[in-house]
Length: 115
Length: 112
View 1 (cartoon, chains in turn orange, red):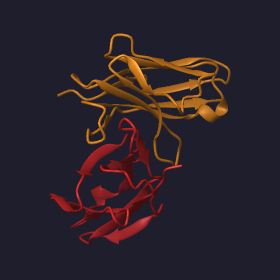
View 2 (spheres, chains in turn yellow, brown):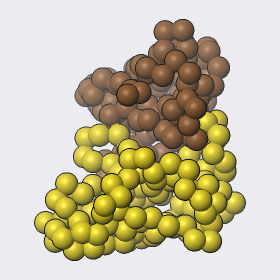
View 3 (cartoon, chains in turn yellow, blue):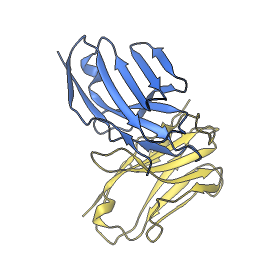
View 4 (tube, chains in turn green, red):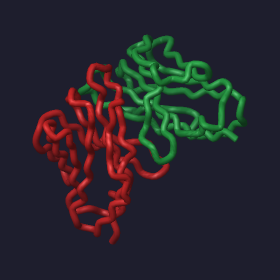
């Protein structure tokens, strides 16, 4: 079974530029998550989708971050404009369902450096 | 603010010893608990999940849960240098939709 796919793996941009990340979850997984992991910290949830609907985006900086999952499968996370503090690893995860017992599986992540 | 706390380490153990990693959480309503392993430069990998009080064993790994004390631990028996990584404790926020709250992780170093 293929895992969660993400691209690109690495991205370097200058502040105030825009960037987009792509994620394809495990086949059959209805729930998709985007996490931000800053060096030395645990991942922090940015946004959670159930199929193509947003379940939780309470920690998404909506003035600069946006995400969509139009067909309920793959998803895109965008940052515009980027700030220095956005330098982090952006992790996509998926689970079969949205209940608390469902295990989440992570993709390889995208390492973003903002200069 | 619901929190998950772990000692940052590093926890250094000799090869073949038992490594004990601890995690406390503040959300009394939490029902599920997960341990992830994260190698340097890699993404988190799920290694254990536990839902009931007591012990759950999987190979060299044992997860222990005590909901009354709000404490979950991970034991690694016969530690190997390949176990050297950061171990993340994750707890879904109660009343939420599987929103995982992660600890900052404990770095484990197993030396030959």
